[in-house]
Image 1 (tube, one colour):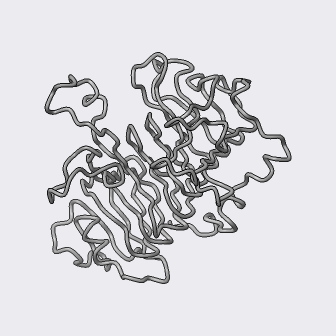
Image 2: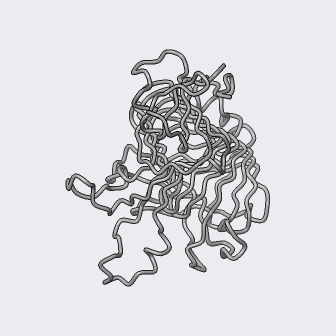
Image 3: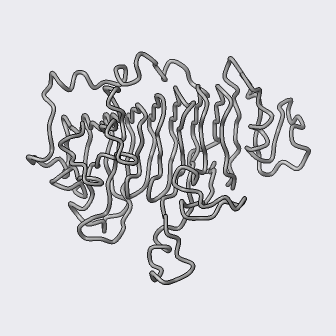
Length: 336
């Protein structure tokens, strides 16, 4: 079936003008604005290759974004938590720093890149008294927040440094994706499955601490948080120090004791940048009080350690995509 709309940065006609019978837009923002408010069926928007510098929110249900190619179709913005909002109402904060925000159900993203282009390394290299230095270097590429549910991303790249993916609400599925970052770069309270994904740690240049993969803030009432299954923990380049990246740490936003983070790695290959300790405390909250486990880990980073709790076969049987996603099967439909 043809898409409902096409986004092409080279389009020179009016937004919405039909090209080969399909409404065509120069920006994704214009295409989203023209989307129906309450589509019952998928509203598929195809994006041609190009770099789209836009900061956007998806607030309408069943929006599907399909890129021409994963590496060639790029949505980018460069807001960090400490940057001032254009309206003068204060800093963006972490939650407001997103490039793409999803607050509606049935969202899909396929074969494209979403990045937060804030230059974290350059900012970190500035002197502490440099007025150009940004305090609050968290910079979110993708935010899934209240209203988001059944969000599915396949063959995508999510690129950032600190806090790349803020998966904070509903159910989400990431299949065959690449996610890059260093500190807490997959975090939040959502129930999310990462299957056949490359989780890539980026270098902070610290021989002892190059960050944390996951920072779940799962609510105590939810049995599942983040499930990494049949995936790979890689490093961006060989110079990243061995043993310098933790699997994660438990996040309690504002000290909320109802947040009992869950992150489980099942049948995941790990390079040797993963530390023997595996998990670290956060804000005085020890990892032993959260739900942080692994099972069937392989590779140089799969180190037996008292602090790395391993599930039995029987326990691991409860951690499947179907269980985490509560019966929703994101692979039943395909946006191509």
